[in-house]
Amino acid sequence: MSEEIIIQPGMSIKHYWRDLWRYRELFWFLSWRDILVRYKQTVIGVAWSVLRPLLTMIVFTVVFGRLAKLPAEAGAPYPVMVFAAMLPWNFFSNALSEGSNSLIANANMLTKVYFPRLIVPASSVIVALVDFLISFAILLLLMAWYSFAPGWRMVAIPLFLGLAFMVSFGFSLWFAALNVKYRDFRYVVPFIVQFGLYVSPVGFSSAIVPEKWRLLYSLNPMVGVIDGFRWAILGGGSAIHWPGFCLSCAISVLVFLGGIRYFRRMEREFADVI
Image (cartoon, rainbow, N blue to C red; front, side):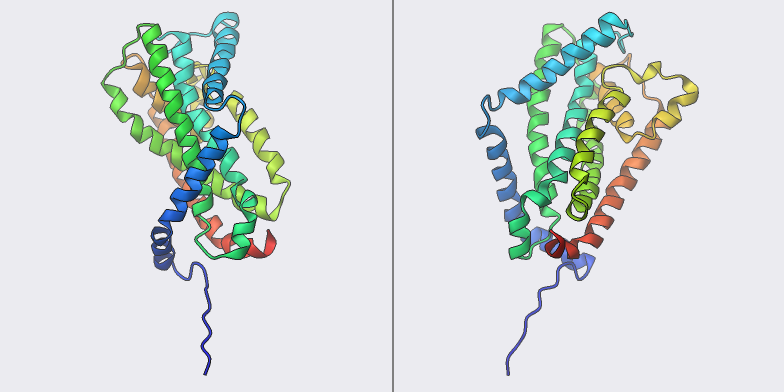
């Protein structure tokens, strides 16, 4: 009498999360592989992670700070204010760009062996975290250059980084799943990243937005994330618009939970569609 073993992914939430823990070594392997590919197979390597935020900061400082003469927040030097927003924004844009294409990039693996597919986009976020740490070191040097001392609020940065992770990972799961079924979504993500850079308060302070529009503006979850980082980095003169911040946090949680739910629902079809 022969026995037949059927491997069925995600039979229940309990089994699924247990499988994630069992395959944790695969998660670290994929993360380390993506980091090596990103920094070794480039002409200038790690310097790219330094040059890109610095050049963006310079452009925004000239355009918004010098030409448009928009005010800096909390009396901070304009470059420091911009770079404080570049930290979460670059984390979001890198995580979304890498995570949304992660399933397509690992198509051969998905069709050959079972493992929780959530590991693939999750490992891509680790690359964005490495970029974040590099940019954070640049920010400290920039603050030292302008003799701008951080305050006690810097200890809250891990909390806001966690919020940025929820937004980034949530959107990555949505677009990774959609990209498998509808391949033209790979053209949508770069547009969202480019458009979002200008509608998010990266090159300017969200305080310039009229009060009556603050809640509407905070429907963009990155507004709350960026305001939180500036509150933590710039110190006492920086304030958070709490109604808008709470709205951004609520949307971030919905995007995160909705992304996991949608990804789990579509996961069974990945091997067939991809």
